[in-house]
Length: 473
Image (cartoon, rainbow, N blue to C red):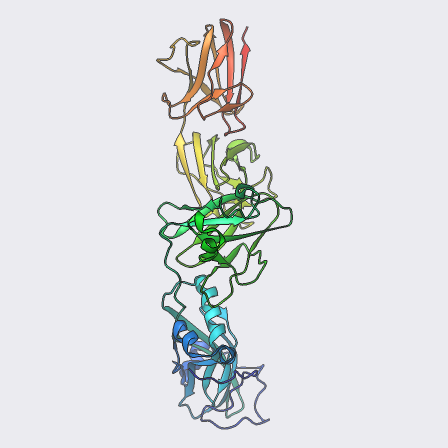
């Protein structure tokens, strides 16, 4: 690595070529040749520089702190063997699509600051993992010819950078502390909030929390520690951010022993949130967790009247509804004013509708916004119990009314009890009260007097399911 300060200007006057003169055509009026054609025609070479392989562990161990700000690496070299080329000017340069500042030195060498290169690599891969990254150094340049004409051309060289070593994944997992309801009085070192390892995801941990404050809620992550060690034990494995008070919803994590100081991130606003920590890439994210998700589609007249619930605020929603093959979308609000999810869970305003291949029918719908997926399970509902003709041994089937959006039956009932259940099994059943039914082992519904009744069931989702039981003529 060379320890030269990066020049502010980005200009190359002659790659072992002649100097520019005032007779040349204006840079802003280049020929219209395609960049690829121009590069080939004028034999412009875009090659890797002598410092095109960077190891950030070595960089930090060998370069003094003050010198790191001005240190630069030779990332690419431009050259041309064509006698028509007089000079070249850099228009732009990016690393894997992320723009970076650069300077020409010594005639034909492209240099970038090492720290900025490291930062650009983090952004390009959204990762701090200690993995060698192959970088495409994409350069666009303007070439002046000796006849006074100018042409634009572009080319790519490659470089490699390995970020600093990150901590190993904690064998005991990770915890949270902060301005959270679950953390007692807040920042209770004896009662941290455990994060759960996401099944099937290496190094991905999550926790759902409820913030206390309408403004900023401060928090940090920690390697799971011995409670008896108190704050000394916690701080030995603290994980935060680089800028104190940073409220980015996606950010890079900083750890004890990092080249940066561990600062404290924040979450803005009061509510439920899901905090996700990626211990492989050393990133974290914060996402709002809502209690309900709505469906609007052809099957319900594109009205947000079908709803799914997430009692644990974990972005996994479950509900029961009628669907058809003519399209639908999911929405975070009971209108189109929130976040709307179309095909492939795209949130673009012009996203296509979700199109199911299953037959039209009534389904249990589970939507996982974390995985951007949904599952459909066909559902048929009946009543069972001592008040029904089949007792507790056999279901009496109900019929779904597409028009009324409910399951219905008119039947002779005895004095006794009943419940609703799906698919002639107890895997899914509803009990509780007629105003509030639950699938969580709800109580039996009582029929006080024998007679003919019309029962309508609206099994929307947890917290919103109900029924009506009315004497029939």
